[in-house]
Image (cartoon, rainbow, N blue to C red; front, top):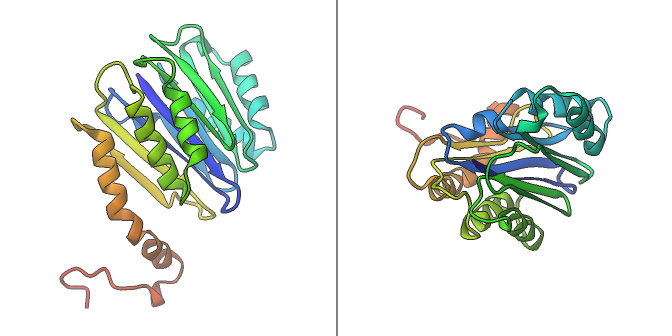
Length: 223
């Protein structure tokens, strides 16, 4: 009941993902990033612990294929899961268990992976990786465009109600962490949130690292 894309920008060393689902709060359970490591996804009948485990194994030096392969071979109930990961070198790996729901598919491209279940059609993940590889701009913008491409390609068979955009850079916290947790058009709403946040993002980073020289918030009382 989810379609998603995970990707990295090797030049900026940023990693992130964009995701949408008919389930509430999908990004809180399925999307995972770690500075200096990469990005992981855990979906279908979700076990959020698997995303954390993938990042832990990658942080310890394993390539995504090794980390994903280990969980596929050793994790209980893995037949119900879809998992994937991309490291900062652009290496990616995916796994879909044989109990994945409905129409399910995955796609791997340069520096990116995409996957989904309960899809309208099996071409949705390919539409996302194709969009990502053909796009330019910031990683977050390219992920957003890829998610929109997945929706245009059919998305989930039923309507989506939640979506998220999550990106990490060199900081120990995500520089983008936007979520729409219950909305009739969550991807459209997520696009609006990203358009509002993008021009403010650097200011929030500056406030974290150099508050003395940070710009004003521009709200009443901040003089």
